[in-house]
Image (cartoon, rainbow, N blue to C red):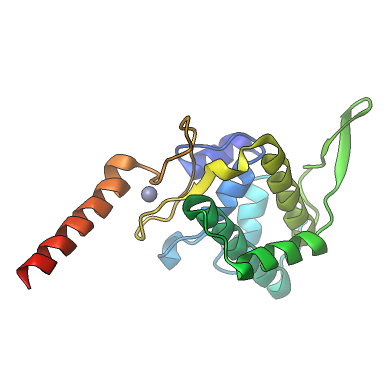
Length: 194
Ligand SMILES: [Zn+2]
């Protein structure tokens, strides 16, 4: 993976590598089609290769594209659960299904030591397996729960909460946090006016 490129995409509040790959995948999502990075097989392939998450020869057809987008939705729901603390049975089951279907490959970067094999993936299935492996690794290190989607309905950017008590709710307090406060304030005003 090209960590500098992933940091450029994520913009701020980076997760440490390799977890930043999960964060960048989550943030390929956009409400606006012109900002969506996984719009069709070609754009998905371009994102994977540009981020050096997949090898230049990776094939992304309709099947692989749909699987990747479905997996991203599950990952985003998992990160939402990290924010809210409420994981739905449906999301947990989907995550388990992807984990079961996607073998995690290991490598031995130093003699006798094992780590995830994160060489650029040769297929979308291999990439999904790598993301599953990265999620597992982050759960072991305790980094996983810190990766969340922003609580603002208008934002939903995945951010890494480095705060000591892991209580961060917004990717940018001054922007997303205030919007929420303003909306709650307006709601209260409307309630008292009626
Ligand atoms: Zn935000």
